[in-house]
Length: 255
Image 1: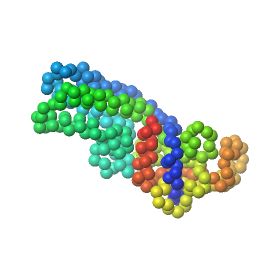
Image 2: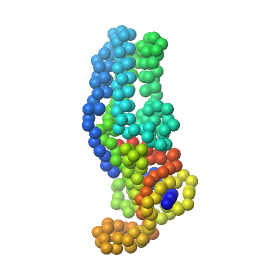
Image 3: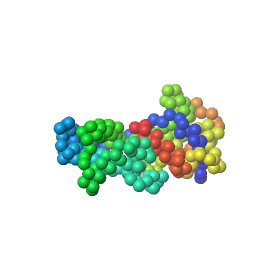
């Protein structure tokens, strides 16, 4: 069964539902290369040392991008499969801004393949600083892998009867399982433009659900803030692609 969920949900404040941790050995390796480049930097560095700085920084960035891809398997995200490179994918997900990575790649390629002169000392310092910020900004994604995101209309500041939880299955080609409580006007059995498509496993009113769980006094106590017309649903988030991308940006931003 298909239902459509109001895109208002994506305007609610997202926060993580939990995360898993990863061994930190991949966290430190890019910094080893960065530290080498930092030690080489000097206003008196000749062109060969500056070439070493550029290639070492590129290696540092490449290792971090590979580490991220090993964890998140970006190419298995259906809505991003047409992207050409991992840098473009990271940019689409707003994990990185691509300009400086592209600049670093371009400089390294002109040195390597066209025997061009390396950048000046000041440009090398700029690239060293960029690489440090890039590593720091992605450290948490290496250390803590988000399990999912819950959208709360009150942003977690107040208790609310409503909320929608999106749980991500990276190892299952990024399937996104959804469950939540919303007011009945936010659910439609007919397609609506720019609403979230949910391949629904179950969808019913609070009245119907309470009837099913009549003997479960604890469950009823937990949900006594619900109106009988409120809707509960579970299923998989299936589209449209633009809203799936928006969710993915929220997922990585919440980390």
